[in-house]
Length: 156
Image 1 (cartoon, one colour):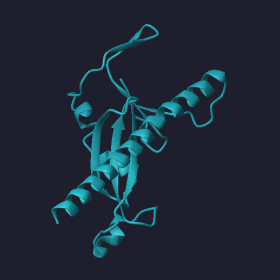
Image 2 (image 1 turned 135 degrees about the vertical axis):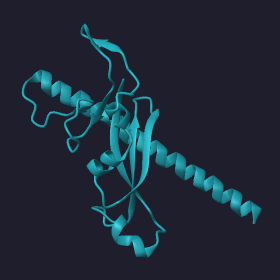
Image 3 (image 1 turned 30 degrees about the vertical axis):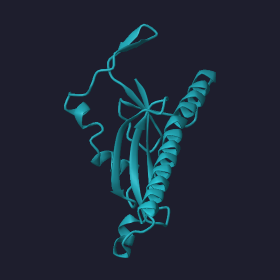
């Protein structure tokens, strides 16, 4: 199985001003971090939501339970074969900020040769799945909020 892993800073508009500093990170606006693992078909396999916006992706990954079952040896097996070699563990496509773990496939920073350049191109194209999943999630949440507001107005 192949998934994409990333974190997104979700802007928190009406936040308590007393917490402004804790939730403000590089975006200079208060945010909550959403960690997401999604596949190419936009199926979301894992979500970890609510970390302070002042954290980065590594802090979020350390605190989420995404790989805790893998460390305990309880992770679901994903058996597949590529070029005659059998694998029993799924992989997450990740960007370069994450740790060098066996389950995280990162892009090559300076690819040498056609084979490595092709790998980088394909890996970065596949990593766009997570960006698409974030956009769909935001759009659906926004639609849901609009529907909720319409219902609230009708009730009033």
